[in-house]
Length: 201
Image (cartoon, rainbow, N blue to C red; front, side):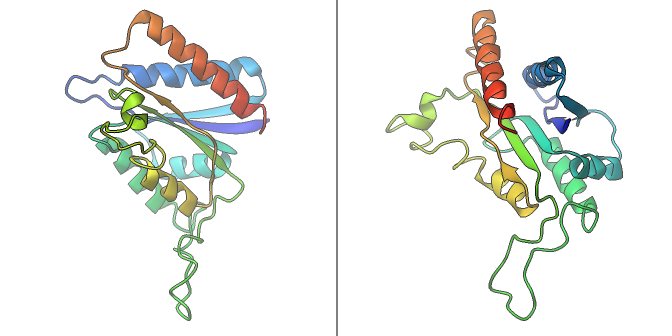
């Protein structure tokens, strides 16, 4: 059985209660549990956790699934702190050993010192911004995708550890567009994405 580690990176802040990403996390757990082909571990960063146990979950997993909202075009602060703390705790414990360079030739091989080779990861994000803000000429994100823009550094972070990126899924217009009908459409489209992604593992 493939081992899947699912992280809910949402938090309570201002008008946000983290409910949507909790819902998406539950959709992921529901799909993987019903398929009966996966062993699952989870973390909700709003709960207390032990750093060494979190490191062990990354090392244990075949696939890490990250669920996060995007606030001010970056990860929420508690989720960023979670990653900073867990990855740092994972130095020489299975996440990374160095930046990959040698003192004899320090100009090359940066980013090759990860220890999570053979693992894959999948990212979901949720946005108030509509999808068209990323695709239409003249709109805010200047025709730059989520993955090549706001989440570029996130993907490089995972590559640094040695992990390989799976196609992610981005939920748009989740505040103004979060009607019951649209939530049903989100779930249908996301479940289809999970089916396509996990059948190839």
